[in-house]
Length: 317
Length: 272
Image: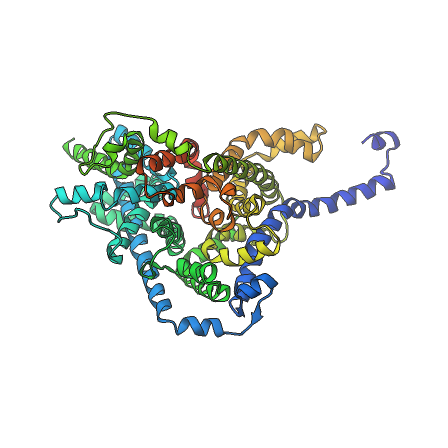
């Protein structure tokens, strides 16, 4: 700065500093982003590529030690596609996800709408309770539910017997996979409701009141107002919540794994558990990778709407 | 009026159902053994005791697990704050080629299924000699925290009026100095929210810690809790006491920042 005041002209040295500064400006965002991008690249992008590559390789214990797979083309895919267990597992996972996501979204939205009808103190109490449930770590939640459905001293069996639903004394919930998956559904939906409810409630609060009143004046019933006015306005939120729920529920692993003492019978395999079993338990990492690739493809297919919305977000910001 | 009453009763019933599992965990933790192993449930801990908690903290490897969890959480929080702040700065304050693509990637990371990625991650980490090491786990956690952290901080940085920075620079501060002195205090709440999010993620995570940390001495609290029962059958009292202890820090922090997390995860949808 001093040189300008003294000499009254811009010296060459300063001009050079100007342009260097502009170059620095252009590079700055990349430099700032570099560390974060490097970590994400190392832990997400490269493994994603590795996953696809491995699914075309024979990758067992021997290859693990050598750190190098052996290319075998589509043999892994051929082998899982002809494996009837695999198809059962896919079907089971899709069905389980559909039930969990539907229940989560319907109940979560219903409770959000209920919140609008409550007196302030009940609303505060219910929201606080929901946040509390939301905060419970998954592994803790699994252990609580495991205790509640214990075959001998579990509170669930006692209550159901007392309510005359049937005789549940010493009832083992995991003997029958349908009942077992019922427990997992309850556990997952219970844990997922708070996030959905609180997000939908926050979005509901932003719906312009005039719109709802205008519709009511025009003679629309409450249900029609909800379906014709509220739902279209909240569509982006619903798309995101449904997609996130699909992503979370479709890769269900730890709830089943921990509840069943790290050794679920094959009746309880979901795609994530099957991939885990193939790779880490019988050391067929290539087969496991192929299963995981199919899993990712199905998930992306199910969340296409979310992807489109996300790309649009990228445009807007 | 009576209609409101009906809704209130329904609301309280929902609250009761939702909260019951948590209530059951805490009360079981305070019950003496014979009240837990009873065929008729004891709804209230009439003779509260702390013996379950003493049992839990005297379990093998509990203090190892506490130490490991604290190390992992502290490092993840510190590193994610620095890296995310720099990244957010780039996204919020600069126009540059590839910015949109990076935003899409940031949002897309949420979609990558960890359960699928765990296989190649294991291969990669064993190549890099990072299996059974806390450092490997820390790098992986960092990745899953960064996208959210960058996105949240970016929102806070956008909220800072440009005039403030400019006036700071006119006053003779270099750009970097302006950032530190003007921006840092203003994005303080964002930094708090981000660090607590990172804390919760790193504290709660199970799958990565379970797959990558083999030695019992190196495990984190969630892995410790998950393997609690296999030692000598299921000891429900100490297990529930341990579970209560493991959730306590998270619950405290979660209640503090819950609103910001809800908005952060769905940020893309609001006014999209």
